[in-house]
Image (tube, rainbow, N blue to C red; front, side):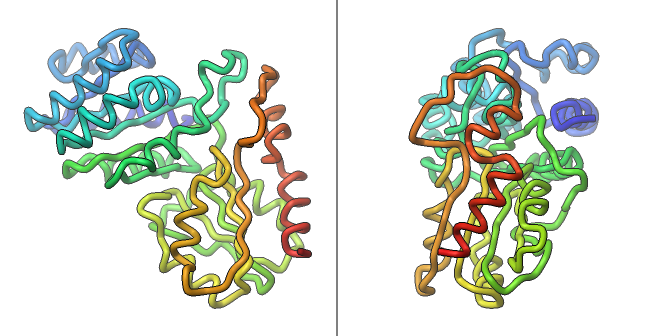
Length: 296
């Protein structure tokens, strides 16, 4: 199963055992949860294509003591109802788990309306959020299950792109050691970063949780290598630059951020590979940028 199917399957199980959990949808994936809705009609709610209402209902459920999980495509879960995310959750002091699908450009055939490379940066502008960017379905399941207890605000960003293997550790995980610099791969970027750095004497780190940022893990890796840090994120380039800089504020370092380009809007349709290439997030482009950075 891919990440989205894994999420839906996990929710189907959780709804049977945790009466506090409610799932709120805006048509997306609703048909897949018909059986769960038949069993729990009061806790599986489809509001239709009303994304602002999706978040407001989640806020209301949280006020009533429930643990709401809101789900739709990333552009409709974060960008369209951002005011409700800010006010009906954060400002009211209640929490929900927002689970997106579609990532930055998983559906290029649908055009710009279904692309949301700025979603993590938007959520990151709000205080107190936990942000997970899994790189494998098994990671998505574990992170979802860990997010359901408690009452904090969590953003779980699912993608059709994934790594071949799961890495279930917490925080920054060391995948390989090297002396010339540190490359931090986020979520589904790991496999291509590993391929792009083959033969390079660099430390490769991995994380599926980008907020809170594991500053201690990054500092340890930098101390044991060289303070040349390159971060590869599957969303807007530079989203975590401030977190890296804060983690290394007392350590002279060089930093380069790779991600979805900020300087242009890519208007092509094509497939995800075409968009990876346009943003320099394909294996060959990452390899070139790593070599240029280390040589600089």
